[in-house]
Length: 521
Ligand code: BES
Ligand code: MN
Ligand code: ZN
Image 1 (cartoon, helix red, strand yellow):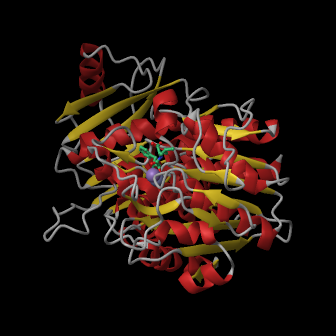
Image 2: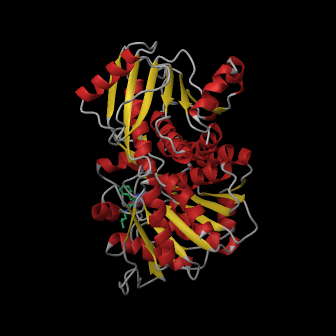
Image 3: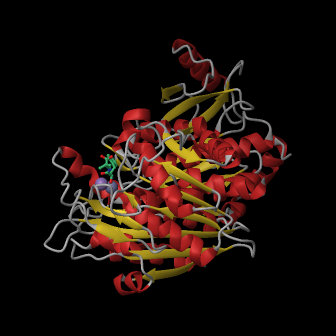
């Protein structure tokens, strides 16, 4: 454990070492952020804002370099606000005596041994909101009061991660985006090495979340199938992910008539994105995401304001791309293939008609009883393609699939469906860790739920979320499979916690952690 004295000894070695600090992340890695995070064991100069993470039960808040006047003023101000170090408390002290900083923000963290990762992330998000409301440019965040080096590193990294996640902006379509002041966060930690390691892992996840938010936020006209696929390629290929994009002719040649059918009414025809991270030579884990880049409903047209949210119908596909990005950036030794069927559900003289019959890649004939149940149509071929071409050991699909899911569970929980208890249990574990929580719904007993009189199956049934899941199960056949319905979780109308308004990137953190939990079990 690096002691405080060792830290002071480093200070004595002078300014030279400051230049050797590893840059943890910079604006270059995230287009819309100008936040720089560095970790060091030695406090520096020039901070206008001090942040102190305070465990519950800290009798008196005090740090090296503070004189008695500082200690007295800070602790008096904290007492006046009833600050006791409970998690999520935040108290600002302006013009602290004896310090050059303009402000000091004490952040309660409760018991460091008990602090959940997602609570630390949310504290970071709240801190970012507070700091962005001031002119802070150099922030020194002191975590020294968390003495255990492993907890210290994990908490510092998670708080920094929460700041990054909240600071994302989608402003590429503004003619003159609001300027984003650059901020340097200098984290004073117990172990620079451990903090950097922890932060590097979470920063990889943040980059994946940003990619997914970016894809989700693109309006239908900009984020059509080819544009989605090319953006994904540009994000993934430099990390060593093998990216293959099947265009409409290849989708047709492969026989994926279900995927093809959904885009027939759009000038933007169907594509299929395949992103393969060969982190090991085991059979791959397949992640299949719904990439319906806009959902008008087709001839079963959406006639309410909900249509204005339907650029978010590619969020499942965006989550798969984001998870692949995070896993590749973390260089995980796991074989993972991401598959995103891409469509635009629109209307024209060529669009699928209600009642038409499509033939899927596996030969199944499907009566289209609703053109608005398009997600399962494109996923059917995505799941089949994963099974047929990659023989995966497991398939997880994720989709903004049904309004019925939102009615049942709202937007705080995703629905999961699987007959494999181990898949449900590991997904639940990943959900608790990331706070992207899941709730299991049943796959039966619903005899005849998607039976068709004229074709093999039809694409609607009741109850609605279950019918969607049972439809997809048909295409997974014997491969262990789990379906995630994340309808209602793609977009936020206003900022909340770690999320700014707009695309959430929901599913990236869940899938990234799940892949690692599942592979390690
Ligand atoms: N993309 C929608 C589901 C959705 C609804 C996502 C609300 C996000 C918010 C999906 O394609 C859809 O339209 N589902 C229909 C299916 C029905 C026609 C069987 C639905 O749930 O209404
Ligand atoms: Mn639809
Ligand atoms: Zn849809």
